[in-house]
Length: 300
Ligand SMILES: Nc1ncnc2c1ncn2[C@@H]1O[C@H](COP(=O)(O)OP(=O)(O)OP(=O)(O)O)[C@@H](O)[C@H]1O
Ligand SMILES: [Mg+2]
Image (tube, rainbow, N blue to C red; front, side, top):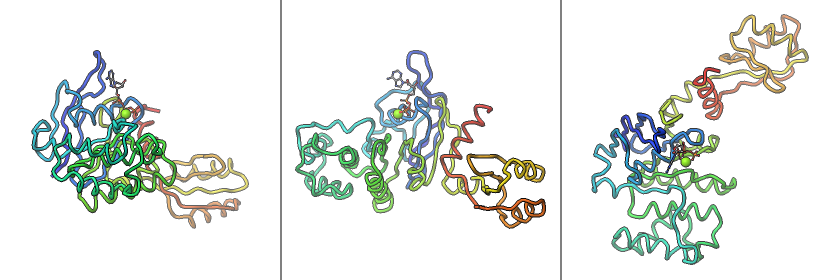
């Protein structure tokens, strides 16, 4: 079953399409990394799923049911933009207000539960305004987790976090999906970080889904290349280009794409009088995959 299934979703603002017949499929249990440049329509999609905006057309199904069904709405938790907390109130009180709003039974127990997930049991008496950015983001997630949602929607939750903050966030997200089998939709520009946790990706551009793929698919599609250094880079590039289809000079290395036999390359260059001083096998990561895909779409 899919946690989210979107077909032909459209939304315009003042006659301009923010989403143009968008399709999206998020399997249950996924950490779905939602990627796209500024203004591509990520937040709009998330707001539509949460019912904060009304679509012009199309269909949104959550766990196989129409997204407006009350029974399904209570299974969605979201952090979009900010947590909407009262700065002068403590972490605990902010969570309590939200828990009461949601009509949660035994709110104390539920607040303890979510504080534990976001590793903030010790900070519950701190005023929201005194919390660091990383803590505020975690409180936002705790708010979204109240009531134990089956689907969690997070809009750029790791923006602005330091290395440690990102690591904690990563651990929390993995915890949520593995221990509580929550599905997570997460938009982010920090691809290197997303790559460490996402099981699926959706790449959006100008309101349309350009590609959806699993992390496994990406792994198998991601091109391999060999990078190397030699004294005469220009000469080596010319020679390698005679034999290999895609050879590029990138910074101080030559890259030979779609090849992983380093010995064959060293041997070939040596036969023609080039001595390789450094050589390495590489695989394109999410960031490069994304840049390549975008430049293809632009017809560069
Ligand atoms: N309330 C609104 N009124 C008018 N235009 C809007 C509104 N919300 C979004 N838009 C427009 O819709 C398009 C998509 O915006 P959206 O915020 O969904 O992009 P995004 O992918 O989340 O971008 P970012 O990475 O900057 O957060 C943009 O062109 C934006 O200007
Ligand atoms: Mg956005």
